[in-house]
Amino acid sequence: MIPDQTNSEPRMNICDHAVVAMHYTLKNVEGAVLDSSEGQDPLTYLHGTGGIITGLEAALLDKVAGDQLTAVIEPKDGYGAIDPSLVQVVPRSAFAGVESIEAGMRFTASDEQGQQQSVAIAAVNGDEITVDGNHPLAGETLHFEVEVVSVRAATEEEISHGHVHS
Ligand code: ZN
Image 1 (cartoon, protein in one colour):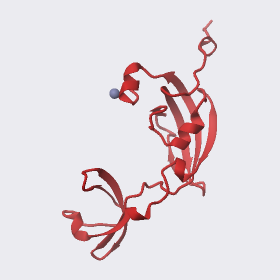
Image 2 (tube, helix red, strand yellow):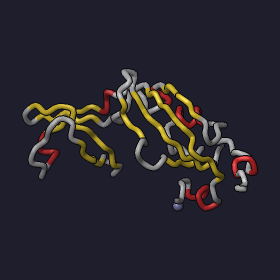
Image 3 (spheres, rainbow, N blue to C red):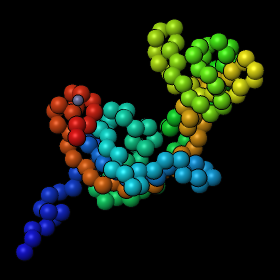
Image 4 (cartoon, rainbow, N blue to C red):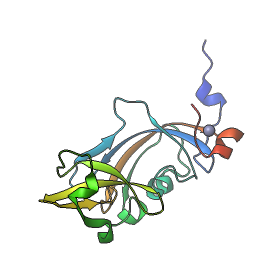
C-alpha cells in the first residue's frame, strides 16, 4: 500500500509569501500564442512581491495546486498602456559601433540617471532611428491559460530576499 499524500496534507491556497509553480500559455486577443511554458519547467514566483503582473497575481489568489484557470487581463493590470513619449527619434550616431540597424532589433539604453532600459528599433529612415521604449506587451489585452502545478510556503530567507530559491 502506498500512502496517499494528497489526502494527508491539506492543499495550500495561494496567498502572500506562497511559492507558486505554474504552467501558462499567453495569447493576444487574436489568439496568437505570445509566450508559453509548454515543454519547459513551470514558471515559479513568490506571490505578493510583484514578481508577475498584477492582473495574473489577482487571478491566482486563493487557487490551489491542480487548479486550471483562464484570465483576461487589461493593459492597466498587465504591461501598461503604450506611452507615446517612450517613442523617440534619435540620430544614427547614438548607435556608435553598431554596423547595421534594422527595425525589430533590441538594444539596452541608459538614461541620464543611469537606469537601464530595453528599447526596440521601430523604424529606420536614413540617419533617423525611431526607438520604442515601451514593453513589447504594452497595450495588449492578455489572455492567460494557467495550470497551478504546486503551492508551498516560502522560507524566511526567500521572503527576506523577495524571490524564490530553487
Ligand atoms: Zn536570494
